[in-house]
Length: 200
Image (cartoon, rainbow, N blue to C red):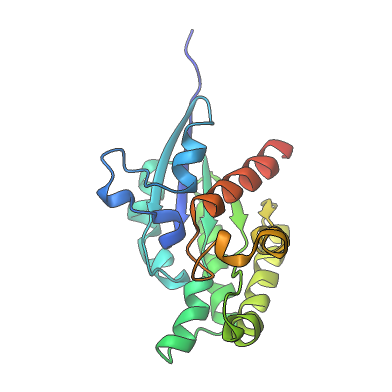
Protein backbone atom coordinates (compact mmCIF):
# COMPACT_ATOMS: atom_id res chain seq x y z
CA UNK A 1 0.00 0.00 0.00
CA UNK A 2 1.48 3.34 -1.04
CA UNK A 3 1.19 6.58 0.88
CA UNK A 4 0.10 9.63 -1.05
CA UNK A 5 2.57 12.47 -0.63
CA UNK A 6 1.81 16.16 -1.08
CA UNK A 7 4.25 18.45 -2.86
CA UNK A 8 4.27 21.88 -1.27
CA UNK A 9 6.25 24.81 -2.69
CA UNK A 10 6.90 27.93 -0.61
CA UNK A 11 7.23 30.87 -2.99
CA UNK A 12 8.41 34.30 -1.96
CA UNK A 13 11.21 36.70 -1.08
CA UNK A 14 13.97 36.74 1.55
CA UNK A 15 11.56 35.95 4.39
CA UNK A 16 10.89 32.61 2.70
CA UNK A 17 14.42 32.20 1.32
CA UNK A 18 16.09 32.50 4.77
CA UNK A 19 19.43 31.28 3.44
CA UNK A 20 18.07 28.22 1.67
CA UNK A 21 20.64 28.40 -1.14
CA UNK A 22 23.44 27.95 1.41
CA UNK A 23 21.59 25.09 3.11
CA UNK A 24 22.42 21.53 1.95
CA UNK A 25 18.75 20.66 2.55
CA UNK A 26 17.58 23.65 0.52
CA UNK A 27 15.13 24.66 3.24
CA UNK A 28 16.89 27.65 4.84
CA UNK A 29 16.79 28.51 8.52
CA UNK A 30 13.37 30.13 8.76
CA UNK A 31 9.69 29.27 8.85
CA UNK A 32 9.92 26.87 5.89
CA UNK A 33 12.34 24.61 7.78
CA UNK A 34 10.13 24.74 10.86
CA UNK A 35 7.10 23.70 8.84
CA UNK A 36 8.96 20.99 6.93
CA UNK A 37 9.59 19.28 10.24
CA UNK A 38 5.91 19.31 11.14
CA UNK A 39 4.20 18.29 7.89
CA UNK A 40 3.86 14.54 7.46
CA UNK A 41 3.84 12.94 4.01
CA UNK A 42 4.80 16.26 2.43
CA UNK A 43 7.67 17.07 0.09
CA UNK A 44 8.61 20.66 0.96
CA UNK A 45 10.40 22.87 -1.56
CA UNK A 46 11.66 26.35 -0.72
CA UNK A 47 11.50 28.63 -3.77
CA UNK A 48 12.16 31.93 -1.99
CA UNK A 49 14.66 34.42 -3.38
CA UNK A 50 15.73 37.49 -1.43
CA UNK A 51 14.69 40.83 -2.89
CA UNK A 52 11.91 39.42 -5.05
CA UNK A 53 8.81 41.42 -5.87
CA UNK A 54 5.60 40.12 -7.40
CA UNK A 55 6.92 40.56 -10.96
CA UNK A 56 9.97 38.44 -10.09
CA UNK A 57 7.73 35.62 -8.89
CA UNK A 58 5.71 35.94 -12.07
CA UNK A 59 8.87 35.58 -14.20
CA UNK A 60 10.04 32.41 -12.50
CA UNK A 61 6.77 30.66 -11.70
CA UNK A 62 7.15 28.00 -14.38
CA UNK A 63 10.76 27.05 -13.65
CA UNK A 64 10.80 27.39 -9.87
CA UNK A 65 7.30 26.25 -8.92
CA UNK A 66 5.18 24.61 -11.59
CA UNK A 67 8.07 22.41 -12.73
CA UNK A 68 7.67 20.51 -9.44
CA UNK A 69 4.00 19.79 -10.20
CA UNK A 70 2.95 21.02 -6.76
CA UNK A 71 -0.29 20.19 -5.00
CA UNK A 72 -0.09 23.36 -2.91
CA UNK A 73 1.76 26.66 -3.35
CA UNK A 74 2.29 28.98 -0.39
CA UNK A 75 2.87 32.58 -1.49
CA UNK A 76 4.23 35.52 0.47
CA UNK A 77 5.25 38.57 -1.54
CA UNK A 78 4.72 42.31 -1.37
CA UNK A 79 7.01 43.91 1.18
CA UNK A 80 9.71 44.52 -1.44
CA UNK A 81 7.11 46.10 -3.72
CA UNK A 82 6.69 48.60 -0.89
CA UNK A 83 10.33 48.81 0.20
CA UNK A 84 11.73 49.64 -3.27
CA UNK A 85 9.49 52.71 -3.39
CA UNK A 86 11.35 54.17 -0.44
CA UNK A 87 14.93 52.97 -0.88
CA UNK A 88 15.19 53.03 -4.68
CA UNK A 89 12.40 55.35 -5.88
CA UNK A 90 11.05 52.34 -7.81
CA UNK A 91 7.39 52.03 -6.83
CA UNK A 92 4.93 49.32 -7.80
CA UNK A 93 1.31 50.45 -7.90
CA UNK A 94 -1.24 48.44 -5.99
CA UNK A 95 -3.06 47.84 -9.28
CA UNK A 96 0.05 46.37 -10.91
CA UNK A 97 0.78 44.26 -7.84
CA UNK A 98 -2.76 42.88 -7.79
CA UNK A 99 -2.74 42.14 -11.53
CA UNK A 100 0.57 40.30 -11.27
CA UNK A 101 -0.56 38.33 -8.23
CA UNK A 102 -3.81 37.41 -10.02
CA UNK A 103 -1.79 36.05 -12.95
CA UNK A 104 0.23 33.89 -10.55
CA UNK A 105 -2.94 32.44 -9.05
CA UNK A 106 -4.56 31.83 -12.43
CA UNK A 107 -1.54 29.89 -13.63
CA UNK A 108 -1.21 27.92 -10.41
CA UNK A 109 -4.90 27.02 -10.51
CA UNK A 110 -4.68 26.05 -14.18
CA UNK A 111 -1.84 23.69 -13.26
CA UNK A 112 -4.15 21.90 -10.83
CA UNK A 113 -2.63 23.21 -7.61
CA UNK A 114 -4.17 25.02 -4.66
CA UNK A 115 -2.77 28.16 -3.12
CA UNK A 116 -2.42 29.53 0.38
CA UNK A 117 -1.64 33.24 0.69
CA UNK A 118 0.29 35.04 3.41
CA UNK A 119 -0.21 38.71 4.10
CA UNK A 120 2.93 40.73 3.41
CA UNK A 121 3.80 42.45 6.66
CA UNK A 122 5.78 45.12 8.43
CA UNK A 123 6.20 45.36 12.19
CA UNK A 124 7.37 48.97 12.28
CA UNK A 125 10.60 49.83 14.05
CA UNK A 126 10.87 53.31 12.50
CA UNK A 127 8.43 56.17 12.08
CA UNK A 128 8.73 55.86 8.29
CA UNK A 129 7.64 52.23 8.46
CA UNK A 130 4.74 53.12 10.76
CA UNK A 131 3.44 55.82 8.42
CA UNK A 132 4.70 55.85 4.81
CA UNK A 133 5.34 52.12 4.54
CA UNK A 134 2.04 51.31 6.21
CA UNK A 135 0.12 53.55 3.81
CA UNK A 136 1.76 51.81 0.84
CA UNK A 137 1.51 48.25 2.18
CA UNK A 138 -2.05 48.19 3.50
CA UNK A 139 -3.71 48.32 0.04
CA UNK A 140 -1.53 45.37 -1.00
CA UNK A 141 -2.70 43.41 2.03
CA UNK A 142 -6.29 44.25 1.11
CA UNK A 143 -5.62 43.03 -2.44
CA UNK A 144 -4.30 39.71 -1.12
CA UNK A 145 -7.56 39.21 0.79
CA UNK A 146 -9.59 40.03 -2.31
CA UNK A 147 -7.59 37.54 -4.35
CA UNK A 148 -7.94 34.92 -1.64
CA UNK A 149 -11.71 35.25 -1.87
CA UNK A 150 -11.60 35.23 -5.67
CA UNK A 151 -9.52 32.04 -5.86
CA UNK A 152 -10.90 30.32 -2.75
CA UNK A 153 -7.45 30.44 -1.17
CA UNK A 154 -6.93 30.78 2.59
CA UNK A 155 -5.17 33.96 3.69
CA UNK A 156 -2.88 33.89 6.70
CA UNK A 157 -3.20 37.19 8.61
CA UNK A 158 0.50 37.69 9.28
CA UNK A 159 0.45 41.47 9.38
CA UNK A 160 -2.48 41.58 11.77
CA UNK A 161 -1.25 38.87 14.11
CA UNK A 162 2.44 39.76 14.14
CA UNK A 163 1.61 43.35 14.99
CA UNK A 164 -0.60 42.17 17.86
CA UNK A 165 2.35 40.19 19.21
CA UNK A 166 4.68 43.14 18.61
CA UNK A 167 2.44 45.29 20.79
CA UNK A 168 3.26 42.91 23.64
CA UNK A 169 6.90 41.99 23.05
CA UNK A 170 8.19 44.82 20.85
CA UNK A 171 8.60 44.80 17.09
CA UNK A 172 12.35 44.11 17.20
CA UNK A 173 11.69 40.81 18.98
CA UNK A 174 9.97 39.63 15.80
CA UNK A 175 11.97 41.49 13.13
CA UNK A 176 14.87 43.73 14.08
CA UNK A 177 14.52 45.81 10.91
CA UNK A 178 10.73 45.54 10.81
CA UNK A 179 10.80 43.01 7.96
CA UNK A 180 13.27 40.14 8.30
CA UNK A 181 12.10 37.80 11.05
CA UNK A 182 14.10 36.83 14.07
CA UNK A 183 13.99 33.23 15.28
CA UNK A 184 10.88 34.19 17.27
CA UNK A 185 9.37 35.85 14.21
CA UNK A 186 9.86 32.77 12.04
CA UNK A 187 8.36 30.58 14.77
CA UNK A 188 5.26 32.79 14.88
CA UNK A 189 4.90 32.68 11.08
CA UNK A 190 5.11 28.88 11.14
CA UNK A 191 2.54 28.71 13.93
CA UNK A 192 0.09 30.97 12.13
CA UNK A 193 0.58 29.06 8.87
CA UNK A 194 -0.21 25.75 10.57
CA UNK A 195 -3.27 27.15 12.33
CA UNK A 196 -4.83 28.35 9.09
CA UNK A 197 -3.83 25.34 7.02
CA UNK A 198 -5.09 22.83 9.58
CA UNK A 199 -8.35 24.75 9.99
CA UNK A 200 -8.91 24.49 6.24
